[in-house]
Length: 200
Image (cartoon, rainbow, N blue to C red):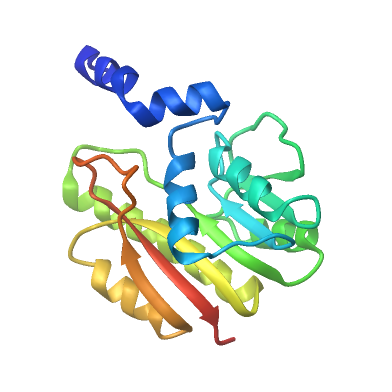
């Protein structure tokens, strides 16, 4: 990993703040900012966090839904336990993962969030295609498990396929918008699709 990247990261305000508060990564602030603007989660919600490791989005979601709600964190990597968060170790590219998550949810889900991203190859087109593939998995999953009126958030890399993806999401929700929170770095190509009011 380049020394310049490590130095830049340590000097990043969100990175420092995450360390101080106890969030597992600076990505926590992206979800905080998204929820402040779009109110995708609220107290009492059942939230499924796809690609959850290391767990910062699950931490934020757990704080928002409170003891009346529940968070299910899904990742193929092992995660350290979190309060009020059920951990499901599963590979979302395998069909059986969906059944494991459904069993853990014990019913319809209010919100599906996904911060999944591919391992970067350095090739912009390949990375964007992989990102879209992961976002499509998250979207397909949300169609299966969200309650009517539920909400969806997914990270995508911008590129040729992005608008088609957003159009597909918009066709199933009452509200759909792309958004780049302030916590996203200026050099990042990531953008988040925010969708509310699942039509079923």
